[in-house]
Structure formats: structure tokens, C-alpha cells
Length: 431
Ligand SMILES: Cc1ncc(COP(=O)(O)O)c(C=O)c1O
Image (cartoon, rainbow, N blue to C red):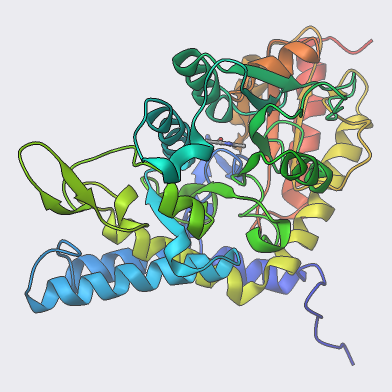
């Protein structure tokens, strides 16, 4: 007799088969081959439950939220706010600590612009801790996606603050030293999971170090929230950002988590309709958060669909998704490492991983690798993955990245590994 899986067991073959049936796109043929989709780190596929939820909303309730007095508007507002609660529960936040944004990039910019608006005196006394000037420091890492680097470069340029960078060792692991987090640090912005290396960073010590000097911490959870349990309160971060399209949801929606008292004290980024109480020709009073940060017409059907994605993930259980992906990630790294001529970025880092690995084949440009794999129906990402400083540190300009999700199978990983071997044979670069 087989016993049923526990909450932390990996997914069974039968479960993966049943999950795959929920994703019609996975039955597609590409270039005469069954699609092997290994680009979920860029954007994930959406199950029918998510597509249906958006269509259901649009065919029965579509209207503007927090505005009209009519029935549809009231019901749309209710499901929009329910969606917020669903996402809040998923990451361990309170409902009013979730701000909807277009994506993670906008969420990071929201925080960075709040700092610079505070720095020019907006927000009054309450916004004191967001004020930056010469002598203040912003800390990020050499591993970041450009979305978690450029907004901080720009904030430094606007305020005169200094940007400090936590460096990487030769393998690509974070190597914090004495000089980065100091008494002058105002904010630490760090990624939970690298979108190039797939490693889960040991962020706890960094968070403690930042808080010990009174700095705030922004966590880029784009590559963790979709793939592993995430509890922002347990991690004790001040802000966290994510993107809906990377976690089975639609494009056009992301979220910022912010601790309530910080959101209450923070000046807004975008301003306009839907975020105010009283407006005169010279000034405006703002609504409390989260609405203070949600100017203009909102992405309602996208929020509803993202909530459906969260419920889908919850129905499987994030610990089980994480276990499945950890196994696929190991298979990817071990399989690639075993292929002569392949250099896996970050292979030497002894940290837990999600199902994502990037590699270089000296002598073959990553675009050619991607093209060759695509001819076999295998979809991967090529280029610098919006992480040029990390690639530069590891001595490459580009890499090829394979990334899995809960619907990915061992046989897909094996087909990809065979494809990489065939690429090397085709280009004749095996030593
Ligand atoms: C780690 C990380 N941060 C931020 C982003 C930006 O996400 P978006 O483009 O959805 O805003 C990505 C997307 O690839 C990412 O992987």
C-alpha cells in the first residue's frame, strides 16, 4: 500500500501529470517537437484556473473599483480587495500591507521614489527615516537583477547618498565584508534568490546586520515567492516585492509588501486619482495606505487572476513545490556539470537552490546555444538576464539559463541536458 505524500514531500509523477493537464500551453509543439518549457524564471505559464478566473471576472463583474456606486462596482471592489487578502495571507502579511503595482520593477521604484520625495521634504516629520543626503548610504549586492540596482543608483544620484555594494566571491556567492553595512546605511536592497545562479541567499544575517544599524531592508522576492514558502514577517523584512507573471499569474500586476507603519509614514510615488481624500487647487490630502500608493485606475482583473494563481499554488502546497524544484535544480546543476565543456555559473556555491541554473559553453555564444535548443522545442533564456554586473564578476558577458516550475518534469530536464550535449557536438567545441 502506498501512503499519501506528506506536506513536504516532492510531487509524485501522477501529480505532475495532473498539474500539466491544467496548462494547455504545455501540450504545444514547437519546431516539430513537444515544447520543453524551461524559461519559467522569465515568465511562468498560467493554469486554466487563472485564465478562467480572469475571464469570469471580465464577463460578470468588470468595472472600476473604489469609485462607482453601482452594484458591479461594489462587487468588483470586493473581489479586488479579496485578492489583496489572498496575496497577503500567502506571504504572511496583513491585508493593508500589500500595494498593487504593475510588476516588481515598479514596486522597487515606488520605494526608491518615496525615499527621494522624502529627501526633498515631502511627508513631514513622519518621513524622517526615508530622508537621504550626502553621507547616507544605500546598500545592494553585485548579484542583483537590474530592477534592484538601477533604481538605487538613480536614488543615490538624486540625493547625494552613496551606493555601497556587497561583493561576490569567485563562485558568485555573496561575501559581505565589514565595510558595506555601517552606521550610515539607510536601506539594504537584496535579492532572496538569484535569477542567474538559482541559489537561495542566506539573507537572515544581512537583515539582522541592517536592522542593528537602524536601516530598512527591501527583499526582492521575485524568484523566491513563486518557488518556496515565503513569510515576510518571519524574515522580518521591511519591504518585499514580487511579480505576478512569475508565479502563474498574469503580466501587468505585481506587489509591494511594506510594514504598515512604514507605509503610513512614506510619501507617495505616483499621484493622481484614487489616492486622495481632499483636493484643492494648491494641495491634496492622501488616503491611508495601501490606496495612497495606488494612483489611477487599477489592474482589477489581473489582481483577481493573481489571487487564483495563489490559490492554485496553495492547493499544492509551497513546501511541496519547493521540494520538487530543489530536486530539479539539483538535477540541472549535476547534469550540466557532468557535460564536458560546460561551466555552470555558481556551481561551487554550497547553498540550497530553486530549479534554475545558468551556464556558459566557452566557444559558443549563448544565443547560438538557445537557437540550437529551440530547434528541438526547448525554450531557455539567453543573454545577461538583466544581471550584467554578476556576469562581469564571473568573467562572462552572457549565459544560457534553464528554469523550472511545478509543472516541469525530470524527463524535460534530461531532454534539455541531451540538447546541451548535442549543441557541443554540433559546434565541435568539446575539448
Ligand atoms: C530577481 C528579479 N528581480 C526583479 C525582476 C523584475 O521583474 P519584473 O520585470 O516582472 O518587474 C526579475 C525578473 O526577471 C527578477 O528575476
